[in-house]
Image 1 (tube, rainbow, N blue to C red):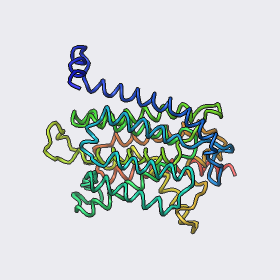
Image 2 (image 1 turned 135 degrees about the vertical axis):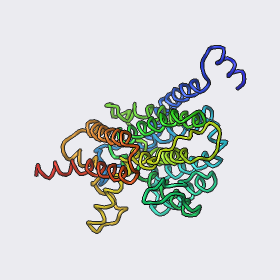
Image 3 (image 1 turned 90 degrees about the vertical axis):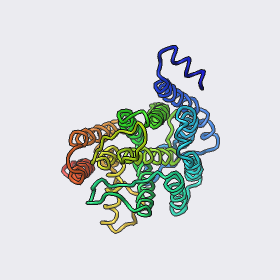
Image 4 (image 1 turned 180 degrees about the vertical axis):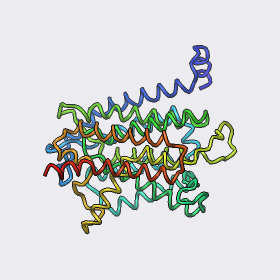
Length: 369
């Protein structure tokens, strides 16, 4: 490593930029090169996704793309952002457990309660074992510093919600992947602006982006023989990693007397983190509310997601993804512009905009009928 540092110094290239560029590039290449053999094996062994009640596809499509994403992220993050695995001892173990759960669910379909138990174990490892938790509400709901045990419960709940929320939005081509790329980019830029101490998290964001872009090449392919889904494996790992980066983002603004940590205090940090993750959060809350109003189980699959409403309007997968992502970016821009207002007011604005976006397609469809 020292020899590499000296070589980069001679070339005038900062080590951080080399890690970021190489991590993103190799992550993309590993995913891109890993998917063809996964496709071949999936088709030979009939490991494919059968169209169901909430499926937006009419054909059987392989759904093990998440394995390639896990492979590239785990390899590249451990090389180019190894500091994270030293600081957070249970990060890699949590990802491996999620890989096992995801692959099992993609192949044989696990019972919901078994998945939930496994997710609780995984999140408890990272929250308690690695101390990745929400410590402060920054005045949200008039709450500031949290009791240790309350902090653990809220953090575990947050992880589980986001892990499953990304699974729920993975219903049309490109949506979960594009959302993950944009969320990672926004968190990565924020980390970069907040000081050198956060550079490993910037590299992790770049690695996630590279991996997902390598997957999207196939997921958005017009050639049906090359198309693949990320499955529960990919969506759970992405949800887990983005929950990890979001909680770390909030934690940055707590003064822990560490070197190179900025003294910049952003009271609206929890609301900004929620704005970046507003798409999966809003979609999940929306379907749960609708199911409860209709007297159905919150865990029962249906077609009440935002992307289903756009498909019912006659839009293609790509157009639906484009409109959802464009509105999502609009909400983030609004949140960033008003980041210095009261955190409770900003959260209210963000949630209102999120639900308005969720119900606009349903309103248009109702007017058409």
